[in-house]
Amino acid sequence: MTTLADQGLLDLGDETLEYRMIGPRPDRAPTLVLLHEGLGCVAMWNDFPDKLAAATGCGVFVYSRAGYGKSSPVPLPRPIGYMHDEARTSLPRLLDAIGFQRGILVGHSDGASIAAIYAGSHQDHRVRGLVLMAPHFIVEDISVKSIAEAREAYNTGDLRARLAKYHSNVDVAFRGWNDVWLENDFRTWDISEELAYIRVPILIVQGEDDQYGTVRQIEIAQEECYCPVDVALLPGVKHNPAREAADVTLRAVSDFVTRILHGHEASAAA
Image 1: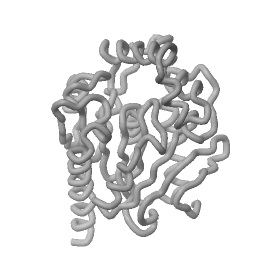
Image 2 (image 1 turned 180 degrees about the vertical axis):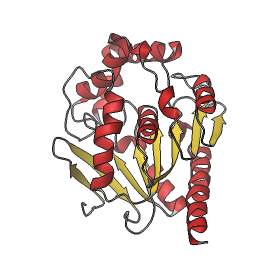
Image 3 (image 1 turned 60 degrees about the horizontal axis):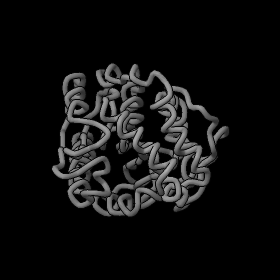
């Protein structure tokens, strides 16, 4: 187990991951592990992790996956199963390395899909719940259309310059996400089967105007999951609820976290 500073680099052997740790460490309180979107990193969460720690009393661990932020790069092209690789190889090692004891996985977009795959393929009793913001369980037409528009903005607009402020190797970060979705038979990607094996409560937070996915994603979770699925569908919000509707998202997530973790601890003490 690594003694966690407030921020730094976590050495997992074949990859080095940038991280921030806010609030109590995993041996003192439950931990919320934040998994970022397909173009995200530690810094792109802004102050949401700090507010989440303050609202819940939990420790919040935020990290950049390999290929993002200041973490080590990844070889390109990435395989279609890159999210499965993250969920089945990288995330388990990270949770062990930080001394994760109990808590909730909080994922956004790709990070939400990775969290769902992990919970559906690992019976990890340390994980008491999932918060999935704008998750993908299948590939929709709207997803591919918006990802193609992102490529155009990257190649001809200012998206590359904006992302370069956050990623040490911006081309690896962007192409490692964008090329997989557009240049492979990614339409076959489907993680709905994993949902049936999740055994912890789920909160889905999604914007009604999400340009990367429709309410069909929510319906799939409700159809496939045997666990409770709570939904916060936010009007006027697109793909990033934590940024576009920070207060409402914070309240929904913190209420869920408090209910799940405090309820579990109360029942364990009874």
